[in-house]
Structure formats: C-alpha cells, structure tokens
Image 1 (cartoon, one colour):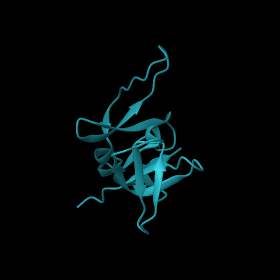
Image 2 (cartoon, rainbow, N blue to C red; image 1 turned 60 degrees about the vertical axis):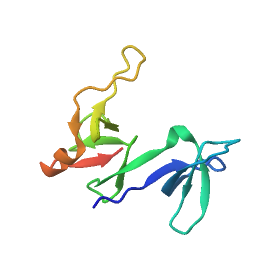
Image 3 (cartoon, rainbow, N blue to C red; image 1 turned 90 degrees about the vertical axis):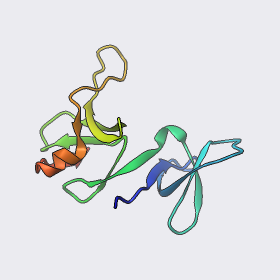
Image 4 (cartoon, one colour; image 1 turned 60 degrees about the horizontal axis):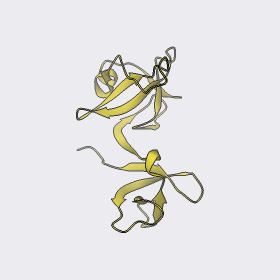
Length: 120
C-alpha cells in the first residue's frame, strides 16, 4: 500500500513541511495546513502543495508532485504532475508562455523499466 502524504511550504518561513494535508474550514490567511508526524501543524502556501508519488529518485530522495526530474541525468527537466489518476512526467514548453505538458509517461513505468530519475 502506498504511503499517502503531502508537502508544502510553511507561510512563516517558506520551508517545506511534510505530513497530512488538512483543508481548513475557516481560513483567514491560508486554506490548507499540514500536520507533521510529530503532531505540529503548519499553515501552507496553497500553490506549493504536492503529493508524494510513492517513488524515490536514484539518490533515495522522495519524489513529489511539482518536482523536476532528469531522466538518466542527460535530459531537460520533466515536471512531475498528477494527471488522470497517474503520476506522470511532462516537459514544460515556454514557447507560448503557457504551461504545456507533452511526452507524457508514467513515473512508475519509468522506474519499472530501470530508467534513472534524479530530482533537479
């Protein structure tokens, strides 16, 4: 069974915190908070929230939605995104100053094929 957890940047110091994502009912400053394993809760910058993919890179670092990944250390960075119930890799194209993904591939399938993934 996959470990479901999230990360997000704390609004007070902009550092990542990791744990359970909680949507606040009455939010004045922010809409979400993360409760860490030690029970501490931190208000989170909404745009920084990413879900753990259940995978680690070749250095053992957990891969989260929103991370940028290099494939076999010789490609432009791909962004990890959650699309159609699957964590996928997409290449960002800035030609039209829009966020466009192409070259979709399953993160899990890449790992199963022995492709080395590195967070950049």
